[in-house]
Amino acid sequence: TLSIVLFTSDLRLHDHPPLRAALDGSTAVVPLFVRDEGIAASGFTAPNRAAFLADCLADLDAGLRERGGRLVVRSGDVVEQVCAVVAESDADEVHMAAGVSAYAQRREERLRAALEAEGCRLHVHDTVITAVAPGDVTPAASDHFAVFTPYYRHWSQQHLREALAAPRVVRVPDGVGSEEVPAREKVAGVSEGLAAGGEGEGRRRLTAWLRGGIGAYDDRHDDLAGDATSRLSPHLHFGTLSPVELVRRARAAGGPGAAAFVRQVAWRDFHHQVLAARPAASDADYRTQRDRWRTGARAEQDIEAWKQGRTGYPVVDAAMRQLRHEGWMHNRGRLLTASFLTKTLYVDWRVGARYFLELLVDGDVANNQLNWQWMAGTGTDTRPNRVLNPVVQGKRYDPDGTYVRRWVPELEGLTDASVHEPWKLRGLERAAYDYPDPVVELSEGLARFKNARGRL
Ligand code: FAD
Image: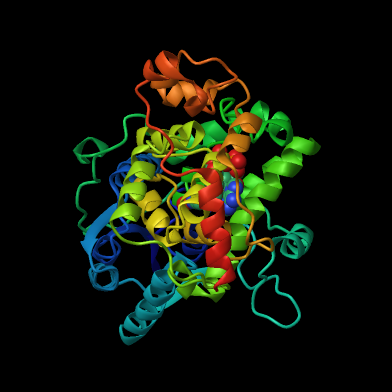
């Protein structure tokens, strides 16, 4: 038997069920990655993710070469390319991971139909992209959980399979042509502080995290300046780390830090099971509709100020500038900038979600769109009308202003007391700072939100 393993969001050799199944049943395997023009056409490729992806593919190719194989890279329509490789290699089977988005679900359907016509079987494996498969835990009367807490209770009780070792040898047949593995250096427009990708890098980070940061995660994860989260999100997004292995190893580390961390990883599975059941939620309001979002010239100005990190609210601006510089933003920053855009400025969550996807290296349909919906109050939040006050948030999660000063250097000289409220300075003192006044008064934003809410 000869098998193809189609890699998608699972760019690793450790704990890879499709690869293991293919190797167990075959004499040779074609490890294939298709640079899918359908994903490019949907506007989902962004420079930061393209650069990180290039690292991941280079590392995957290197890992396969160490084992006697290589990665086959193709470009074009994914179904056409897989069928072409089936024809070239005379493959009997294709193995791949189950995806959750509408695009991934359709890709799977199209592949299944096309391969059947070629007499080739498609095997789709779960627990590759999530720790618990969507649909494996469901409430009595629905196909998915709409609320996190009960989902988490059930999720925690699920038995996780053993993590699989990386294969020692991968034999790839001759005669299957490949393009060059794309190079990170060729990607233009990448954020200056973008992290490096690849399975090797992901595993190093995970090991360091389990030895160090995880212990203090429950106390420190909201400390904006402390940067005390794992930063494993891009590795989970590209699948250079296995969520099953991650959860197993974090649980083995033990303690309240690890427990809080695993709970956070469960949020990822939660959003994936929502999207798998309701793929339209990538764009359509999941539960509550809020219409009459602000539009027009004034709203456009506010959106631009938000994107540029010039809203006049220091903690919002710091977070938006971190996003631009690193292609990543701290979770607390994501929460408060999303609340600010959707509830204080009353701008459609889709505008913010789209901008995040242009920059985030971990930008993910399930996590991004559904977290935006959560914060906009159109999604799964059971308190959809909560509004995060950026001054209170700044004082609480960046008490001495270190985060603000790091990202908004104009405010470097301000005292801790005024760094979150520079508009309170008067006269010459205020004039010394080249920093905008707030785009909106918080009370005005709140009144507009309450008024709009009342009219729903
Ligand atoms: P850690 O705190 O170390 O958490 C570990 C892992 O748990 C993360 O890597 C992530 O995979 C998962 N996780 C943590 N919090 C969440 C959450 N709220 N929802 C889902 N998974 C979570 N995460 C993405 O991976 N991609 C996105 O596109 C994305 N967009 C977001 C947009 C908004 C508006 C908000 C509020 C959150 C978004 N998140 C997104 C979730 C979260 O902010 C990031 O996963 C987290 O900041 C990544 O940093 P970390 O790896 O250091 O996280």
